[in-house]
Image 1 (cartoon, helix red, strand yellow):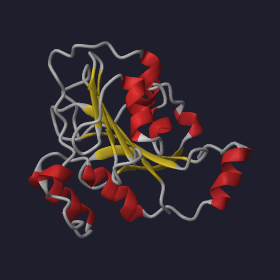
Image 2 (cartoon, rainbow, N blue to C red):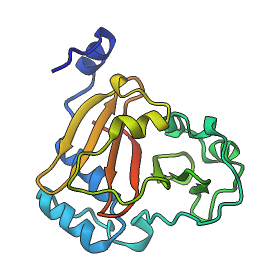
Image 3 (cartoon, rainbow, N blue to C red):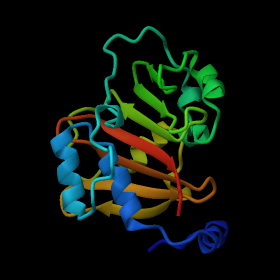
Length: 202
């Protein structure tokens, strides 16, 4: 196992142990199909959170086929920086207005970006869908290094939490410098690769 750089090692001492259930819930929450989501929770042996199967909580990914704007690459660089940022401020980076539930959705030719707010004030969840990389498989290792590199993130600065469960491959990490959990996975076979970011609550 690779030795962690000293600053990361010290930060890990400060952070409490990562809950496997919370990592599993993060993975399951990204499913956009009700049956797939149910199976995910069942495979992990955890209860389905209240309201998780409601349409508004399915985080449905609906990339536009013909996006009207080109999103500067700098705005998709290091998406974890948007976690905790005020929705209005984050919207300025993407030159869009928040929708009726105060979430930000943006498409360009490379990415479908969702910035979600649980309190209607600040960004609590970020999802980036890779529109150029479809036909992924849940039964093959996720090319996490490649996906994070596209987002200007060095995987060597992340701490690996988990790479697979009995049903499918995914890569889940802790970004200790920003206290962010991030996962890269294939939501379902022949679908797009997705990377998500959420504040570590442990």
